[in-house]
Length: 365
Figure 1 (cartoon, rainbow, N blue to C red):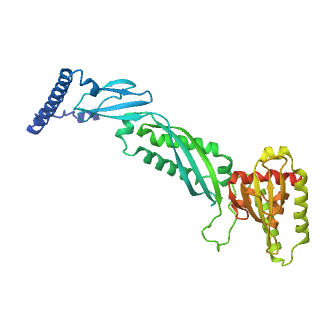
Figure 2 (tube, rainbow, N blue to C red; figure 1 turned 180 degrees about the vertical axis):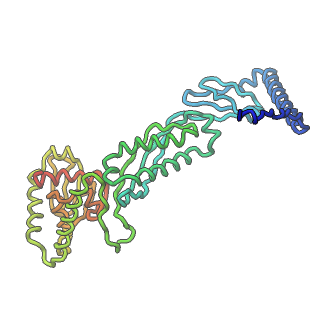
Figure 3 (spheres, helix red, strand yellow; figure 1 turned 90 degrees about the vertical axis):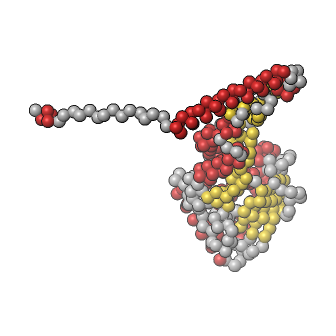
């Protein structure tokens, strides 16, 4: 048969070579180090017993319930000790206390470009605690810096894959995903993330640094984009026609006066309790003249009137007359106008967006 022509030839067994002189010397050094370690430890224990009770004041340490103590005995780490009384051997033990309580840091507001090319200013708060005291000491030197730097990078990467609408409406989901991502990265340092919170500081216009560059509205997300696109195009055409006309339009002026009269009729205590903020409106007419109008919804039934708000308003809004009419009619949303640079906000953005409730009541929507 064919397989008979192949004969099995066993390979010669290779015997392990005898230990060389280098291996023997290394093994003897290991045994010598172990012997020295045991001898020095026993000697220090003996000295501590002889010098009792004076040495007890230097050997007994109190570890609180929120702490753990990591002891290095002759340079070798020992299992974490505590809480309670911990015995520290003088001369050979060095220890470090590790705080196990929850700590927090804030990611300073930074500019992040969303998926639709809108610059968003965001900040985040991260709460963390040490889960493994030995890893937190042995793996990294500056624990706070590493965690904060990791959180900043992950926040930038996460928001760069989302649209503006997703960022504004899904901050809770973004915070949960950010918490999971940070936990995955920092668990090797013995740290656990307890809570994260993302706060939207402001929505900046694209190319904000160069005011001479024309501002284009941002690309819209996949959901509800057609209606917003049509509303933006209609409002931009209206604005272009209004600007090219050198004389003020009586229709728009009548609408502005009608807005003020209707606003005085809808002021109520329920609206004050729902909004609870004061606004200063600076409206630029088509003729180039700027007029001021304030809305106070902080106490009583609220008040409004022409001129400057008597005090410090919570939010100051600057827009053109045409854009204000579009906001009232619902042809333009405040978030879209702000992202396109047609609505300028000085103050908290979330408080500014509360004004949409007032505009909806003016239009009867």
